[in-house]
Length: 220
Image (cartoon, rainbow, N blue to C red; front, top):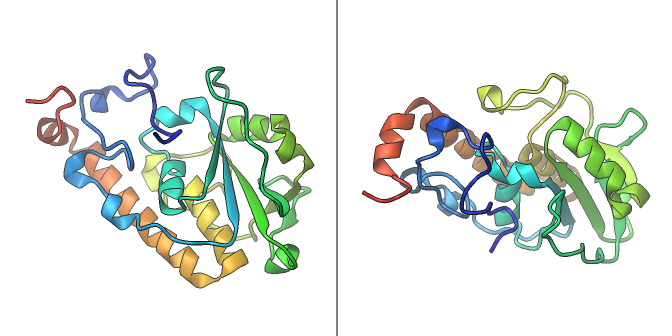
């Protein structure tokens, strides 16, 4: 079972009241009537993607890290803040990068990964959660901090907003990083899937009553 699948019952306050009674696909976490698993065809990449996931992020319908893990089956997922999780396995060989927009981080370029496999660590959570995970994960502490080039924008829109300018969703960040490290195709495939996710998630939010009737959690 994916590390992104939350326990059967979400903790109080961790799931929006308007969607509590909606059945969800365990892979994409959208209701079955708008499931987008067909849009998440697995893709092969040279870069080893490692997601540092805050344990509360698993309960959010707006989370996109689970889509990254679905599209890139070799993704390593480390859940932080959950004492029931197993200790993290060692990272594979390669040059390790931590993708986080720290002011002192270097701008990510393909040249940085020349001569070996890139291991790309990406925090998945709010800004504060991401910062704490980056500081507490031993491998992240030893990694070379990198950031995306200036001018990156998000298409997350009303789904999820941040007080910090220039932030993007986890899936957008991974897509842009892979576009730099591996070429345009990886970026375009993930971007198309992300746009589908945003469109269908917005539909669920604006048609919650109808979607709940079509996808009741407890069955009809």
